[in-house]
Amino acid sequence: MAGLWSLLKQLERGEASVVDLKKNLEYAATVLESVYIDETRRLLDTEDELSDIQSDSLPSEVRDWLASTFTRQMGMMLKRTEEKPRFRSIVHAVQAGIFVERMYRRTSNMVGLSYPPAVIGVLKNVDKWSFDVFALNDASGDHALKFIFYELLTRYDLINRFKIPISALVSFVEALEVGYSKHKNPYHNLMHAADVSQTVHCLLFKTGTVRWLTELEIFAMIFAAAIHDYEHTGTTNNFHIQTRSDLAILYNDRSVLENHHVSAAYRLLQDDEEMNILSNLSKDDWR
Image (cartoon, rainbow, N blue to C red; front, side):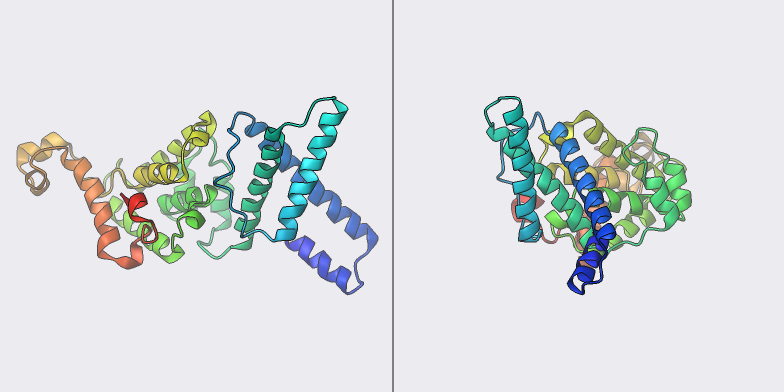
């Protein structure tokens, strides 16, 4: 995208060569065509609903070009096969355009968490069942949860959708990591939280379940995975009950640790506004 803008400026100054122009246009066409084909295939079973499409962030000329180009191509394909145009085809074209828009928006808003090169390399496999959370933790300097949480919220465009302040997001997930390390738990630690978060993503993504969920439900699932063992003591509920620990007394021996994980994580959000990643949710969404 940056290369195309640079080329446009060269054209305005009369400095661009025909060879460079041709090369860049061919590359852009290949990328967009590939995205369109992949997304059309992926969306073959989706419903014809456009109510959730919002294109304000994409320049109007790009949006118009996407719609006209892809609907025209689809129309030509249908004529060749002597089929009548179907509304679903246009829907797919628009949805493919929205996918390109999200890709555009992500590259246009690069302010956020800085990824070390080693982390970028490991995260290339984040969609795979064989993802190596230990490698991510090593590459990130013991911050596997921070990078996986940020990466997944970014991939599903949830930071933009729910207007999550980047500074609050980073502060919150760093506080989560501190809590996961509080009791020096050898298993229920930040790597486990990162592992479960990535596994939830993999299940959603690979099975296609993600297509049937709202963005709020996806956000809730990733959030739940990230916090689900926050401040785990490394002992069982029964241990807390039998030793009459403070947590067992607080929760009256009922789901002692589970109650604590959720309550303590929400206390982070409530006690420090600088960590409140849910600050811009509506009341209904928050509930």
